[in-house]
Image (cartoon, rainbow, N blue to C red; front, side, top):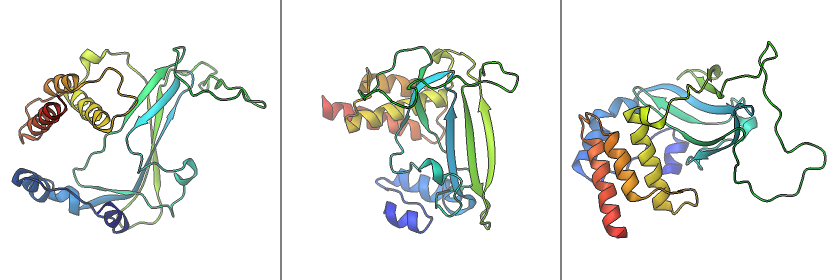
Length: 221
């Protein structure tokens, strides 16, 4: 199904309940049928002065080579009306110890990335730059927009409900896959994050996810 949807620039969904069918075929119909941008590509460049290491969580089947970002002949995903995409990165701040694979020392270049500086020669405080490339639904030439971002230094306790809920979903996925990067995550911590990020939940979708985690926890126990 994934291969067919990729070839046809479409979408696929697994409908296991009447509620899921109503969500996909009713409430999310515009996002599935009305394309507002095609061949959408996202590239994140971290500032080595602020980040010593990073890891993208998930999206293994969606990763593009760096040189394909500017290649308009390389097919990418479509974005529908009201459609949103969330990507999580795990980062190690500069100056903090990071677990690195054991490799031989480089002979011709330094293993330490140089610091990043602004146009005035000052060390940049930007954490990253998000680059977004897309085509109009009826176009063949992509457009590029960039969004620099500076870390405000806020604690996790001040994170939004949406962020906490998305973090719980990412943790749940890693637990199910038996990822080596789960750290101290458990089904209980997933439930705690999901409850904190549940919010109003008008459609009941987040409550459905919480019930799914409880079922998985029961099976694991």
